[in-house]
Image 1 (cartoon, rainbow over the protein chains, first blue to last red):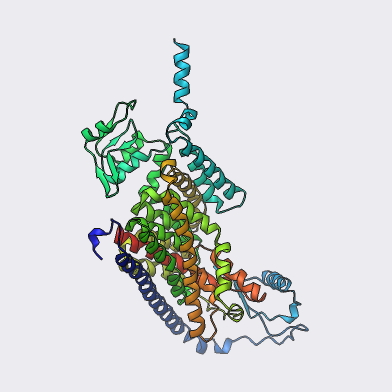
Image 2: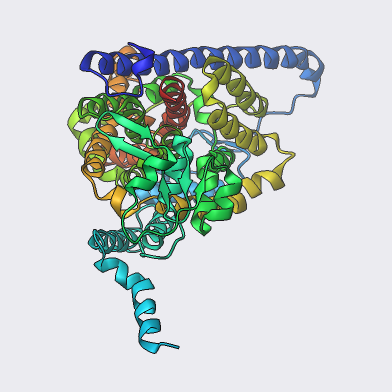
Amino acid sequence: MNPVALTAKMGMADAGIAAVLGYAVVFVGLILLMAVVILMGKAMAGTRKQAEAPAPTAAAPAAPAAPTGTPAPGSAGEVKLFDVPDKEAAILMAIVADKMGKPLNELRFKSIKEVK
Amino acid sequence: MDILQTLSKLVSDSGFAGFFASGGWKYLVMILIACVLLYLGIGKKFEPLLLVGIAFGALLTNIPGAGLYHMGMWDAYVNECAYDAANDAALIEVTDEGTRLLTVEEYLSTLPQGAKEPNIVEHLSFTDVAHFGGLLDILYIGVKAGIYPCLIFIGIGAMTDFGPLIARPSSLLLGAAAQLGVFLAMFGAMLLGFTGPEAGSIGIIGGADGPTAILTTSKLAPHLLGPIAIAAYSYMALIPMIQKPLMRLLTTEKERKVKMEQARTVSKVEKIVFPILVSVFVILLIPSTAPLIGCLMFGNLLRETGVTERLSDTAQNALMNIVTLFLGISVGATTVATRFLTFQTIAIVVLGVIAFMFSTIGGLLVGKLMYVLSGGKVNPLIGSAGVSAVPMAARVSQQVGQEADPSNFLLMHAMGPNVAGVIGSAIAAGFLIAVFG
């Protein structure tokens, strides 16, 4: 591909090379970025583990007792809530059940988290 | 006072007289096209925030005598040649071989009978634009200098949650795959006789990212800005109609029913580090992406830091709205009848839809590949969201997935490829600007 001729009309071969090269550059760029993001995730996970490691020995004696209450009839397990108040979680579960046309006690919600 | 002469002058100076001048019918056609675009924006709600502005800009610029936008001045600015401010003409001659600069003597010899006394300006600067230009010329400086698209990217960054992408980095592959249409349309445009910069500008419509398309075109082929912006925003509004048939055609019922596992929780620190990391890495890789990626990630950083809420709020709302207003009307102003009503516009409209379709196909095919490689854990429908129209493309993935299984919620899984598409189209634009700019 002759760079001098880029602003002029291009032949089929040059046009094909430019298109393939461009697509390849986008792919390579995003694959490299993917590797960087994966590395960042691993580094963060490693840092988190290190920060959490001494916590169990210090906190072990003060660990709260597991809840002993029996679940409501028809319910199964617990739903984990991340930054979502109980009331909003109940509304969300009701909406999902309504949309799916199924009774709430036939559905199982594992967790609800707010996407920030 | 000669009443008849005064009335005659008033009539000949009015805009209505312009419709009866040579080629004046084209302005009427453009006013009708502007009205159709206004109907699509207002009545059909096709990307109304931008399309209404673009359509009204098109309406204003095609009213003869209004003098709000001067095409000749921008031709002179782009070609770095002298400009006749009295007759709004750049001192250039366009031939089949390309553009040739004219000397003042050559230009004066080509002036038709009845033309105004020339007022030649040797080298135009933005100060001259402010002096000789109309209101829309002055607003258009923001497009020409590449300011508006970048400011919009700050707003987009402030509105975007990159969490799904950080949680599932393989989404970036889908964002890359969905740039297929950009380069296929570019190839097609070159075969149709467009120059490299023009073809690149047409191809970027397939990135489904309005500000990126406007920035790329304003740098590479500003004379095509009007039709390219209109095509890009119109097709973005038509995404459900373009994508859904292709998604149903290219995926099986079994694939569409795949329920994806919930992605991991992303920590706040990761979300803060991400925009910094991406800015440094991508800009080092392809420096010409700096304006787009830099602004996108700056906006995102404002959102994620948690200490710049006021700035994030301004970027998402006030700034975004003001810039959208200026961008729409000034881009619309470039649709001058003599430039818009050409074979090129028809070719751009056709190539634009081809670009959108192949971008969708590219995303779906790599989505299917990931479905196979993951042992059926990835729903290929999220691949089509790799075109960057956020969040419409992700919503289409959700809708088609729910058609197959009402209990399937793909939205958050599709948001990963969707925001990856924004980065992908910015890289594609960076490549095109680096090669053809």
